[in-house]
Amino acid sequence: MKHRQRVIKNRLAAKSSRERARSYVDNLEHSLSLLGTESQLLAARLAQCEQENEQLRAAQASSGRPQGARPNIPARQQREASGQRHETPETEGASREPAALSQSSLQVTLNHRPRPTNPYTIKP
Image 1 (cartoon, rainbow, N blue to C red):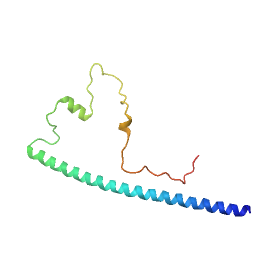
Image 2 (image 1 turned 180 degrees about the vertical axis):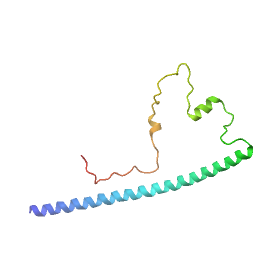
Image 3 (image 1 turned 90 degrees about the horizontal axis):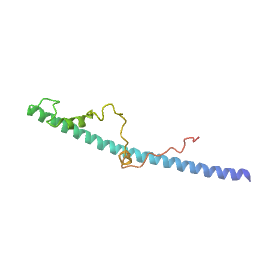
Image 4 (image 1 turned 30 degrees about the horizontal axis):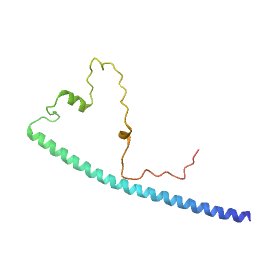
């Protein structure tokens, strides 16, 4: 009698394990297809940006402006664009700790489900 119950319980556990494994593989395949699509979109966007960059370089070369020359913009905007800080008497020697990031700036918006977890990992 106990042996029969153990066999039934084992069959149910095996069936549940197979379903979890199937679900895990399905989630991985879905993620793979989404990441493949995203990769293709990003590759196309990169190619477009590279083409635009080449066109801008050609236009810049034909305008006679030396390559690497910045357009005529105020020094403050140039510093901000390059990430340089302007030291004022108030900020000179001040701590250089990064500013706190807001939660909204930390959120990543992707058009796919989060990465599936592996149900077969051993939990402590």
